[in-house]
Length: 79
Image (cartoon, rainbow, N blue to C red; front, top):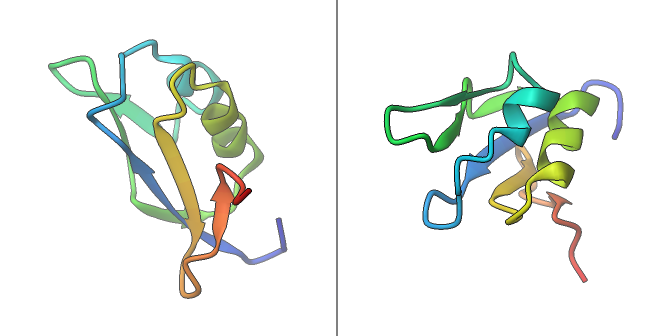
């Protein structure tokens, strides 16, 4: 994670089970909607350890993070 990096954060709503682990780890980064599905507060945000922890803690890996501009995967890492 480089200084000044910008991330695009997406939640695959077909995978999201509403566990709210993302909100536990990054309460400023995610919200649950009325269907109890997560979505990022802002799709593009500054690189943030809490948001990365949220993506890593998602039990169904529904959160994807890419670098704005290049589209390079931050999470999940490319195999």
